[in-house]
Length: 173
Image (tube, rainbow, N blue to C red; front, side):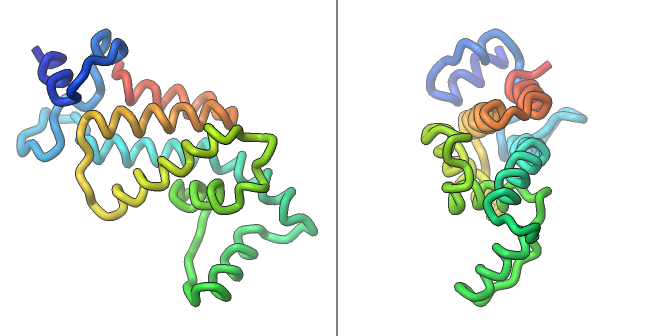
C-alpha cells in the first residue's frame, strides 16, 4: 500500500522504487512521523553532506593543480569574490554548495575529467542546494531525482563509497 501511495505521488512508476522501500516513507509536510524516519528535507541534507565528502578531494586536487604555485585556491577564489562582488564568504571543502559552485564556475579546471553531461549534474544540484538552503519543501519525486543525480556525479568523480551511501538513501535498506 505504501508503494502505491508513493507511486501515486510521483505521478509515474519507477522500477527501483517498486522493488524496495525508500528510507523516507512519510511525505514532506506530514505532521506525524515514525520515530527515526527522515523527512525529504532530512534526506536531501544528508545527501548534501555525502556529496561534499565525495566531491571535496576531487575538487581540491583539480583546483590545486589549476591555480598552481602552491597557492591556496580557496583563498584565491575568496579574494576574487571580494573584488568582484564585495562579499566575503567562509568557503570550505565541507560545503557541497560551494563545491558545486566551483564545479560550474571553474569548469575549465575539470575539462577532460568530467563530460558535459556530468558537469550538468553539478548545475542541477546547485539548484537543489539553493532550494534546500532557502527552506523549500521537497516532494518524493524531487528527492529521488536529487539523490539519483548526486549518485551519478559522485560516481563520475570516483567517490564510490559516498555514491553507495547515496544509493542506499535513495533505494532504502
